[in-house]
Amino acid sequence: MVHRGEPGERIFHRARRDRWPRISHGRGCYLYDTEGMAYLDACAGVHVVSIGHGVEEIAEAMSEQARKITFAYGQFISQPQIDLARKITDLAPEGMSRVFFVSGGSEATEAAMKIARKYHVESGNPSKYKVISCWQSWHGNTIGALSMSGRSAWRKDYTPYLLDFPHISQHSTDELEREILQVGAEYISAFIVEPILGTSSAGLAPPDDYFRTVRDICDHYGILLIVDEVVTGYGRTGVNFGIDHWGVVPDLMATGKGLSSGYTPIAATLARDEIYDTIYETAPAFAHGHTYGGNPLSCATALAVQEYVENHDLVARCAEMGEALLDQLQALTGLSMVRTVRGKGLLCGVEFAADAERGTTFDPSLGVTGRVVREAFERGVLIMPGAPGPLDGVNGDHVAISPPYTVTEDEIVRIATVLGEAVEAVERTL
Ligand SMILES: Cc1ncc(COP(=O)(O)O)c(C=O)c1O
Image (cartoon, helix red, strand yellow):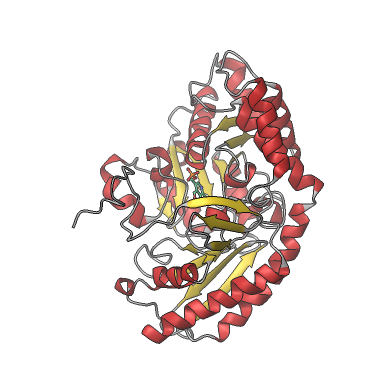
């Protein structure tokens, strides 16, 4: 039967669903629908909200900027844009001091792909264009970003449109080098990777020496390292950027989500000085950009958010609360279908298995992930379904827990308790 949504409603929905609650407002870690139901937002929407919902200072900053100027195109730069670029680069790894503003994470990764390409063109290496990425990674839905992404389930319908980019296994430096040799370094522009996995396998971090080795391989073969910090950026893992856990400086970084905590659509691609200087040593322009990139209202909003994060020391709080959350979630490993609990800061993942000890996965047709998420939703806690098939694109079930950095200890206890109840409810039906 055709899915039409509610009578008279005209939204092109992303999925079939019997009923969509309507959002009314948010305060702190809670969202309220128009029927008065409260939801504890244990996944920050989709790893977005860092400072909590409904913060007055941000509304004030937005309204102040809206009275001055909200939109001006590329004929101008603005003070909020200048200030935000400075703020972001002060937080970023040393030497990443140029910011290209866009409106979302996919635009940010695609801008990184194009900046890398432009860099090679301007450095006299025009044969370099392919971007290597990892299977089951996620870099966004637009065609360039999806070509880099490794989430099989979301690539499938669009395969004919996708660029012929190589994919390797997560966290394998051997495969990275082998792929470069097989394809030919002269065709490889960049390697893109999430420092800690977000939507595809939340909270999964690489071995300690991974990024150092990746950096060495990229340098050796003249390949740029793009780190996708769209989920991990701006404090979510308890440090400013995920890559800071390993002290490696990438060439390009895609950022989004936590930049504005969801108060406005804005994202940003950061580049190392040398990348920018090489492009502008010769090129008259970087032929890329979007209408709303760097608009004054979004920049002023994100600036107010980042100042709030700094003034309330929220990155340190994220690290501290992350430990409390992980502790609480660890208790769930006593449940028979909970296989692994992991995380860094407030980016945690819980993986399920039919036989947790042997790691046998559930039949995908059971839809275990969706059932756990629904059970939690009905109990008023929002958790994020992990993308289908974290292991091979087909098999594996997992959820992500990533509340705002302002989450309290009591709220953490509630999240873990409800998740435990949801898992038990699903276990009973299997
Ligand atoms: C790591 C990562 N990169 C890029 C994106 C794409 O961001 P957006 O959905 O804002 O386009 C996402 C979205 O979830 C993401 O998780």
